[in-house]
Image 1 (cartoon, one colour):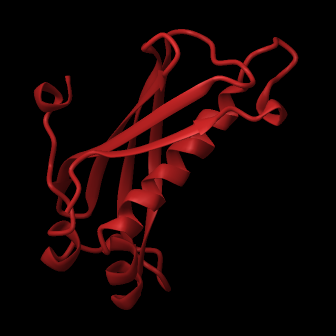
Image 2 (tube, one colour):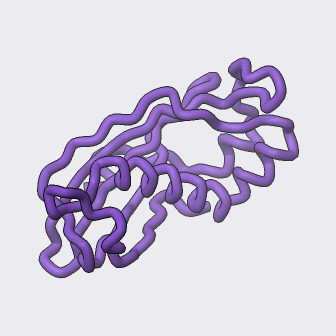
Length: 140
């Protein structure tokens, strides 16, 4: 079980927009990608699929603090802060490694749903047990 999950990458030029910095849509894609990678690494993805369920995003929140540019090396971190009934909140932090600058922070509220009916389902312990919850203080 990994409480914090990190992924480092170089920003590709293809996500740079007309303003010369990373387009906001890229951040949402990276948030989804790391959420899936973290979930897969702790066995949650396989368990969720075995139960005939899936996760869907209910809401995303992002606060942009500084721009990222093509060629920047970033560390994206994620962690789960809540698991309750059918919902889970996951936090994110984007850090530029060259100067240790936090570029953005974010959160997604995920809902555990039946893969066929798309109706919310109670998160079973076999899924919630894949994650160790992290408080804001623990991630500082």
